[in-house]
Image 1 (tube, rainbow, N blue to C red):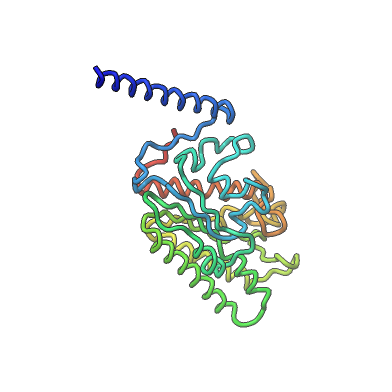
Image 2: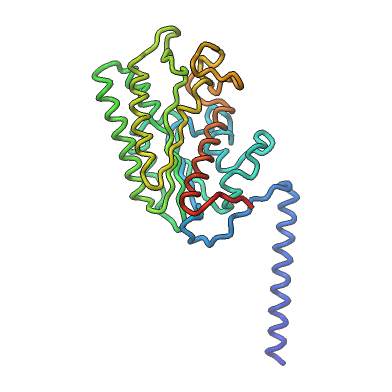
Length: 293
């Protein structure tokens, strides 16, 4: 009898715990609205479940210009459904609610910043899949042009070598990872007149092309996906309203930039769009199509 009584007490206690959990879920739903972020039902140790998201790079990734929680990384991690209804349920927390965000990207960062500051601050590898986004190279290019000394070809080689080292270190540090590697955009829509209207810097365009060419070749490595920000943003820079520009977008002749070289709110969302597309492609290659629940 004593044993049976103990079983009954344990069963009643379990029911009470379940009731408390359900009540908490109801209260949270009422506070946060009807949107829920349910993970794909995989164990935490699954090699295909994203358990941490590391964001590296410069202001293409950050909230500094689009606004708080409106940068590309922030939107990929958790969409703002009222502002971007197209991406409702299309963010990391809707895929895997336990994903941890490590936000290391910073305004003004260069490839040297990533190598010597951002990478050194990262956590170790964890069970599951580590997602990494990288947007870097633009500030290196600008600094090389401003310095105006030495060979721009030599500067380009240094930038490219640094990006190669970043990818190598990431792949070594996080053997189970998916790296989304971004190209560097051109805010002049192919003209190159960033500093003086009507005075294109052809050397800068050559550097940009060489850097992006190398990034595209790196993106064929296993577990590395290309995020072609450069191609996607052409026609939405300083010459977006020029119908004679070869990249003019008649369907959407809008600027995606603010302060000349930084993404505005729409620009940040477009970078997020590319991140999401690359994530879909990467996960499809690993385990099949992305599924939100």
